[in-house]
Amino acid sequence: MKKLLLVVFMGLLLTACTDNNDDQTKDSNQEESETTEADKHAGDIKEMEEYVILDDHIDLESLQMETQEDNSDIRVNFFEDELGEKLYKSVFVKDTNRLKIIDLDGEGLMFDDII
Image (tube, rainbow, N blue to C red; front, top):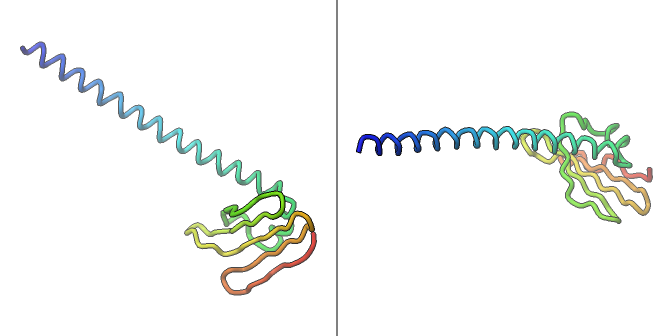
């Protein structure tokens, strides 16, 4: 009887130890995924046609970009601070190369021109 209890206890102990390793692996994989997404996002913004103008008018280093729409006609992006508050909106019309930058915090239209 003691041997049976010992075997069951050892099995539970090994199972508990194995689950912790999986959780740690999942956490580290999730962190790597988040880093990869951030790096990919940073590369995407620099490849956009309107990047130079956006960088002149908005501090892109301190803001996160959220793409609301990106299709063959138009690209709409929001730029958020670290708290998730949307501060700027950009609208790029691809057919005409028109870019609009809007300050959502009060100034309104900051830029509206063909680039």
